[in-house]
Image 1: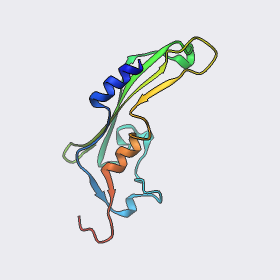
Image 2: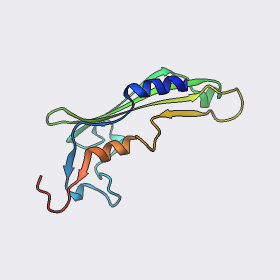
Image 3: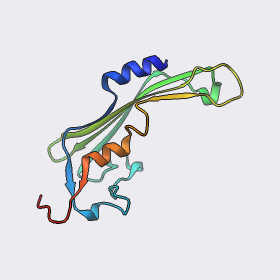
Amino acid sequence: WDREVDRLCAIDGGVRVYETVTLPPEKFNKWGEINFYRPTQKENTLGPEYIYQWEIQYYKNGNPVLHGAQEIAMRRDYIKIIRKSDLKLLGEFVSYHRAGGDLPGPWMPSSYQCPEKLQANESILLKQIFLKMIAGDRK
């Protein structure tokens, strides 16, 4: 299953940004992250100006945490950010995950992901789309 994760990831995994949005400094917190991100708001996670869509496709819909480490679960996560005013796709992120498939036993199942979280994740997507305006910029 790890080879399948790698194969699918090579096709479309990772972060892709099609257009950036430069925002004023007040739209960012002290860590440089956008301050209008509300993950519990589903499509409105990014407020009224952007559509946030997260789709999960299950290739193997198991639950190794509940049914034992030998059970396998595999999925594709797809996140896309769209500007509402013109329905322009600003960026997308795709990752593949495998959990379980281990020898039976009382332990937690192993997992595997591509791309690795440090290389590509939702936060990286948001940081690459939403850029902080630097003093003196006129956009």
